[in-house]
Length: 86
Picture 1 (cartoon, helix red, strand yellow):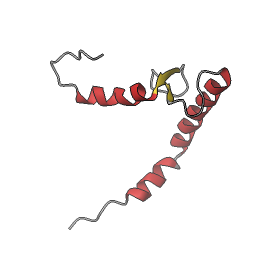
Picture 2: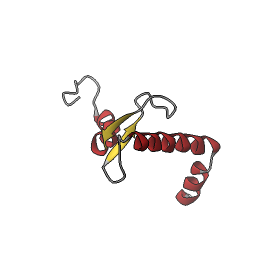
Picture 3: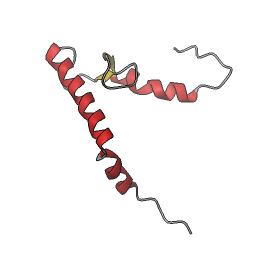
Picture 4: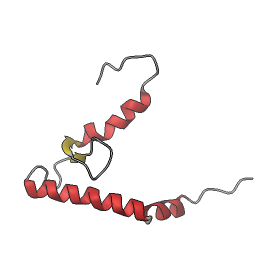
């Protein structure tokens, strides 16, 4: 029988990597910057979106529901069908 995966260890290992720390730091920086500009506030259900996929580029403010559902919509698309919701 195969040994069970140690998810806790994998999680700790990923989040302590230099790349993950750097990306998280940049995302936190962008969030703090948007708070200082008055674009977002704690508890307002808004997310900072990085349209180019990297935390060092420009960002925009989106509702949490839209920002977190976008990847799900892309994953659920079937080849050869148009996505009418986007």
